[in-house]
Length: 286
Image 1 (tube, rainbow, N blue to C red):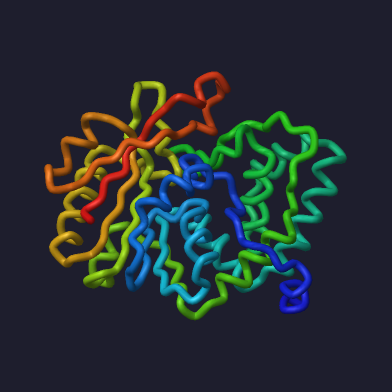
Image 2: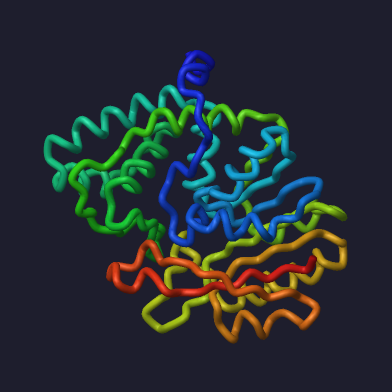
């Protein structure tokens, strides 16, 4: 059945979750800085996977090792790859029940703790499509704590895209892992391309959105990431890093690194007037 669906819904895969800091709107700017030639692609902060899907759209046979420390997100990728039909069926049930009583159903699912693989991933995708601004945030206990969003008709089941994502992830050239970003050091080789898109350093005291796992991404983690970039540079890997335009970020990279400012929007800001007019940094060694 999966193969039949894939033939019917032939489309380019896109991110199946809305993720804070997602790069879908910046693909055109990022493309200008992606190396023209490289061997394996590494992305240790996978998130919504906009850059991954963009590169696979250009070359479906590309060797990729992608990872994230968010185990719920990694499970979603694996489930879409291996059990997409069952996932679609579960999401369709969520959709029909949600529209019967949106508020009551949303909070009942937010408080639930399903045990099965399908229901865990289905819950994640359902909440992502119906919560406030599609923001993924958890508290110190790892509990999802985002309120209900103000949507009239959210697209809870995007079957066509899920099937396209499933098909492309089934490539034997793609490895999906749940691990800390430093783990790639053992695998990356000369002329491999590594793209880092970590939780950004806050540009103000009220702009701190780093709670994608119960363990926040701290400034110490950013320092650890900067040291990893230096070690990858010594291995002659091609390294590209995205982050906020702050003095703290710039200070961590020596003059040999190229720093480029690009325009960016903040899709998750609760005040729509504050979503535009921002810049962020691209830092690279090539």
